[in-house]
Image (tube, rainbow, N blue to C red; front, side):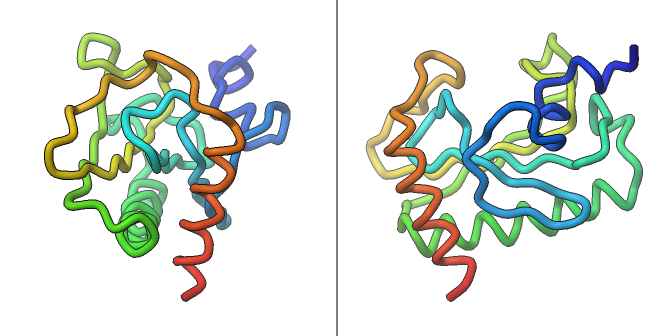
Length: 140
């Protein structure tokens, strides 16, 4: 069985497990991180399975980059953070917990401690509300 058959992000792409989607096109998907480092923490993934930056096809990398910029702009407009962290990790030693290329968009406010990813699940209703605000900003 291929690596993508067991990949949680590939399962989200295939609709086998749910996600709170923010945006989707032919090559990319953006959805809320269920264990956010900050309210509004959004993930952007390539629909094609590639473990890291070193593995992803150029066309998919470019698509993820464009979607990341678009979603970050919507997060800025919707949530009005003082800054936005854009993180991307390659390999478990670097902190990558899902071996499928993805980018973290993490809104930050002055005085906010930098949260650690993966510590506690967020309230699904709160995630849905944040996703709706970000989707609305995409359409504005």
